[in-house]
Image (cartoon, rainbow, N blue to C red; front, side, top):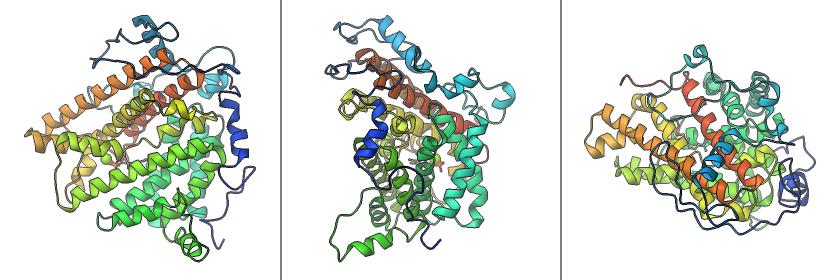
Length: 441
Ligand SMILES: CC(C)=CCC/C(C)=C(\C)COP(=O)(O)OP(=O)(O)O
Ligand SMILES: [Mg+2]
């Protein structure tokens, strides 16, 4: 194949993005075309402003959040909304949202499975059912074929690392409601492409802070295309084949656009721009070996963040969280808290890997130790507490939002984000090829 990276994907009813066909395909879940859980033709009331949820400690459900329709919320409303989010949709027509539940009731990992990798002691998390092994194997087979044959994402000598990343297990754990393996592949290709950019541009596979801005901007045009004159367009098109990160971004985006609505595509591009901004701040500090204040580090990590992964949960699930609801500040806060919790999970599980890497690699325990004058152990334990506070806030605000805006697509989206958070923790915990815990306990 002379141009594998740019060949249009072979399956699906169309080869270009943002056309009406995409809306039709996803329209089963918009507000006028119901999914199994969506009320057909239901009028959407205005969302209230962000629920006034006080900062809280574990297990305390806030009581002062307006409830749906009544103007007053009760602790019971919110507790039941939280339970609903964590349990997922139920009732008539929702069985298909739970492929794992349909085939085998979810069970927590057995002690033997958990022994593969222990959770960080004291970390607030939720166990997930083992991902469906048939799906894991099929996603693993297809993603390797894509990475090797379609986009040449890595040279042969990196094959062990590609396999050790276990991206199939990661994505199946994070998207249990994906209706088909094709849907799972949307997330899986993007995950591989995002990691190719991080590894090859920013980190330990040839990356460097020097010149990163230009590399990221040019790669970003694989997601958000250049609109230019006939004279200059061929050079841009050619550039998209010129390295693995760009080939991977270009192809993964093309597949994504086959299933995404225009609003979902726009949301994703925005999240990827945020990610690239975060990479640049991290690189700027690395160039001068600067250690930011803890709050500054957390701000950078809110952008250099997993956010683009949970926010495609609706595309991967085959429905749409409506754009005007997604844009609400309360929804944005829930998404940000979820993204931040998942990313601090990475800081905790990748701590020893990053300590062993050449130079200083910033992560939350390292920044706390440096800036707050703590021992490595105390700083790590404080980072666990920061994570737990983020998780508790995420769960409280998600429950408040579900109570304030109990639309099926919103509830399913919140559930999808919560499951992504849990699947992400599962993958970090069990990926002992990549991560190991420090000896602090
Ligand atoms: C998949 C995706 C959108 C990643 C974005 C940012 C990113 C690579 C992380 C949040 C993971 O952090 P890190 O670069 O520290 O990864 P490792 O610790 O090397 O696994
Ligand atoms: Mg890390």
